[in-house]
Image (cartoon, rainbow, N blue to C red; front, side, top):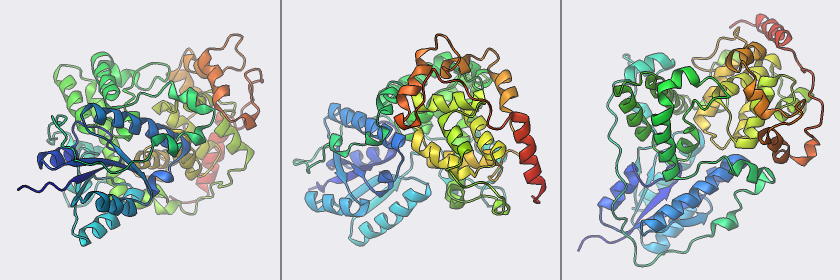
Length: 473
């Protein structure tokens, strides 16, 4: 008789059924599969917006599993303890999961695998969160890549396995273990009144992610390179939200991008480069985990950044009240939609770290609380790139001028009009929604006068360069 002990399929940031190597491998054994999601020590520490959006994704996965004749079991607690309990409850002899590469995940997963294997459990991790396993991408001399462009050239023509279909059948156990109720977890609690505003902009679940990719390939990828920097234009894929929770795999996106390129849409190559930029972030997080918490370039450790979040300038930046319209529009877009245009991310990060000389960690932690597409590796690399302390970083002497950047990428100020209500006689709902989403304790209203700049663009550049000249790089 074949072994009929169940396999626990531990879902994490891989909340889909297709192109899921761990799920496929479990189903191919013919043994019962018990899908499990754990509200564990890593998830508990996530910020308000990521936890809220994760809850929506878990609910979507549960519905998809139900449609497939299976069930998602929910448990809360330390990952090791929960897994041991579910093993005891079910007689499972194996636990499969998809690998993660950020510091918090590895700190959890390494001891989990060790403890389970010591108990005789077949604990296996599988790829799926990245295109390439970080340890398989090496320079000609055998080291890891510290600069993006050579890495892109190295992996550009590298084979990526074809996307796996959803298993035709997910074998089920005769008895299901007990499950928590997702509603009892209250993953949306910290969003408070902003929850309903942001929820309107979320594109949730595997089917929606695939639909988003299909629409992007059909309508927007042909103009991606020329349109993606225009914040008022729908020129990007929006897939960062779905890749964050694994509602779609990077391989699925990669193959769709290559097909578009082969179909004559030459600007699709820039989309492929963006997928590898995400890979580069995880490549660095794996090889140099300090990037998530410390200056990647250690010679920046002595730079006198402000670390006091109580300063009025930091508060103004967080509230989208700096008086610099590009900065404020981008911050307000984040509070309403849970995301921010990539050009806006560069501008707000440059303004905080260079014009205001505030530590990049302030911004990193704020984004980690406010973005529904928060990604630990990409967030860290993005902030350090903007600050100048990271790999492949923008040079310290390059200080984005947020005024000229606005004139260049939002000539008609459509982006500003969309998100800043003050001064408009009839502001759009998107701009008004900002005041419904933010904490009431901020005491802000659309009728308030728009503020003067806390630090003007030219003045901020001079302040930054003066500070840089007082240290050697």
